[in-house]
Length: 53
Image 1 (tube, rainbow, N blue to C red):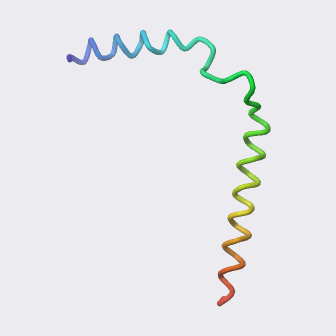
Image 2 (cartoon, helix red, strand yellow; image 1 turned 45 degrees about the vertical axis):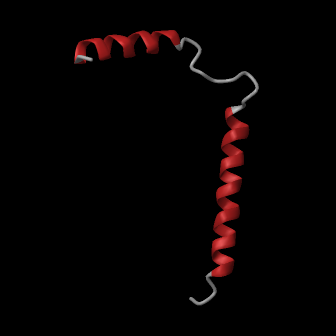
């Protein structure tokens, strides 16, 4: 494949994603708060096991 044909196929692929690829049932706020909660849980677990400081 040449660079031009690769670029053309990527442009065609990008034009096909008109809706952004997001599923209708996924809420960005719910996903963000869930990820934030998981990170806080991991931080709490890490600090509980690191009592030597």
